[in-house]
Length: 360
Image 1 (cartoon, rainbow, N blue to C red):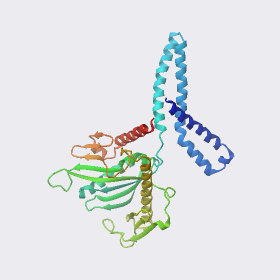
Image 2 (image 1 turned 60 degrees about the vertical axis):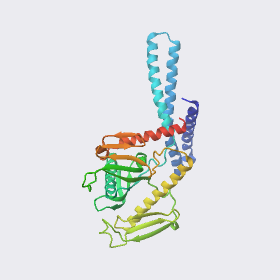
Image 3 (image 1 turned 120 degrees about the vertical axis):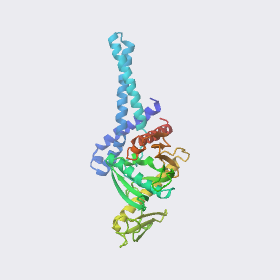
Image 4 (image 1 turned 90 degrees about the vertical axis):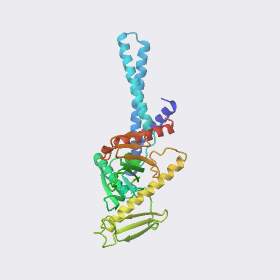
């Protein structure tokens, strides 16, 4: 292990021990808010510290095995030491790889619930139908993970698709798994409306936003313009007798969110505010990332909706993710929510890039 890496890990271990001592003092132990802050800080580095201390223990055992080989003449003892040395070297290599991943800064949004927005792009009705297909795909994936989905807003088309659908996914570490889905998704297939059997190319955009709590994004009452009106369009017939639809404009940024799916004005307002907070948090996060790495070329995980990230070719049953350089001939299974292989590849690619940037 390089000395710089070792010094960094030793400092983290000392910080963990300091937090442990502080949490035992009356000043901290008797103050619930302070204690929670210390406990949270300790928990964030605990896995790294445990891994490094195991690495140190295995390192001591390796030195002991090497000492036996230098000093011992008994053939049987030397054979045992040789075997231990080989095993310990493998273990240390695995632990060092784990440490390099654990030492990387964690995305503070990874554990958050997520708001996903899918919109039809080029392709007319066919793009709208593919929006519905992607929504079902993510719903199946969420169900497989034990997560819960809730539609916040939708704009249906007459053929059963959506011009736009916005939904929330709730569960453990949702954002960490879905955050690389943002971008342009291109589909190649014969539309149901195509009489000649010709393959059409359409596109939809996906935005993945971490859910923002009120403490994450400060919104003043004077920052909002809230308008109410009657719902309209497909699905609105049962609710358009009252002013239940809500449009919220965030005046400082010009962001506008509308919601009309619910019969209750209060429910529509709550859903619209959830979407607005998520969009504001995403904007703030993007601005910070841009300042930190203005020259970063890779778009993995950026959520840049101008970027074509994936192609779905139905005639060939082929899915290609252009960032991970991964092609699978299992598009049918993928559309049923079996998307782990692609997500794992994107997470690995992002981790490798961040490790290279950090020089670990």
